[in-house]
Image (tube, helix red, strand yellow):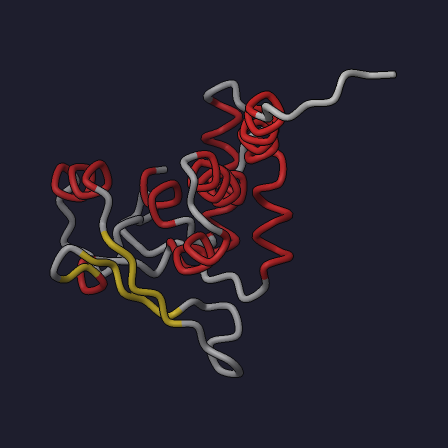
Length: 159
């Protein structure tokens, strides 16, 4: 869960991540989506909470996440297993992709720009990031807009 939440990566990427992708406090990897046609290389800082999880989870595998048999997950297998974990936890509305959206929304709520979010998620279009974060930023944007409205001192009384 921490890998998904603190990297905002897709399930096909999270199953490929391992210690070889972490160096100098950063996670560096190439996204699986379009990796042969139009690759996106990401280089993001390791969040301290993720670092703590990685350090507390020793592994002798090339991937952080493995099956009960010690083998790497496929993207589909991980998605199915994550669905089971969510259901067992009483969270049938949650999914691996939902954590990707949640990471983007959390960044937006904390004031990250669309370009900053794109640098973490690997999205290529502003439209896609805005679709992910529209609801998250709405309240903050409304607060900021209303503060400007209230701050206006040259108001004209209504007729």
